[in-house]
Image: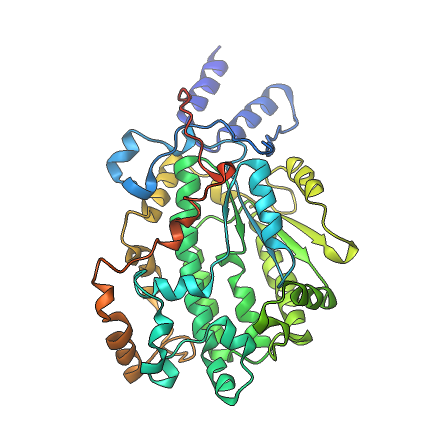
Length: 423
């Protein structure tokens, strides 16, 4: 009887703790010997919606300290409360796969960040900062993907030297999106998220630029330092899906989608495509395997069967670590208090600068490729940031961070069905 009361007391103390399953397993093993861990896998809802608690309106209300007394993360978390990221080289079908997974499992689909999103973000969503290029000093101008990939002039070749700064700012924006959309959404609604790329593979692009000669060693060192320290604040995805494609197939797919500045690009050659593939396999995938599950599909074997991928996902255990990777899912194996602390940090109702302050500990001043210095920076501030439209409320655009919450497809909208709270 005393042993039973002790076990019961231990379970009560751990209520609300994500480690409860471990306590149950340990108690069972001590009582009847080693047992099998039961894992609740992803559940498909083809074309439908999963039942879940009414979502917390985080985009409007945010999440304050006093909200912790009336709302909990673990009320909403279920088998499908997972973050999945689909990654791969250029033109490998990431969008189609991610959207299919979102539809089948009732997940929120979050598209990749574009350079256009970033240039609007720089001005507080008031206008596209590329409009000011002609007024800026040459080194302070933008270099978007069209210029980097497609330009064949001597001026374009010089402009490509500015692309590392574009890539660095894209990383900062991707981190903001992962914080205020992806993380905030799953913790406030319980609905899982599937992403087309994201901040976790952003280092792949920097490594590709470095290997193909578009980024210096000094800039790569600063970039890696920023990446390592900034991403340390956030939970890793539960699952990374990598679409592996040989160089010839990537080139063939680029021609099929027929984006003008990609088709005959002087940058996207065999070396560039192979360098990106190597960066994924040598750096990205080994890192992600330490923190979550990884699936790799070889597109050289034929067209990817999306329904077979769904079956694979239904059979995955995305909760329990393996003997080879004992720290998998540790990010998510925390108390509800820690989940609420992260929830407060990433709430969209807070100023963007609070998340942006993550980068303030060590700005990359030692790498001019990543940061504007001296006269160029002051010119940029004066011309771009002090444009009258930045203070005029008549000029605005919907924040791209929230566009995924306003889509019309019902399968990616949060379920509003209220359920009885668990005890």
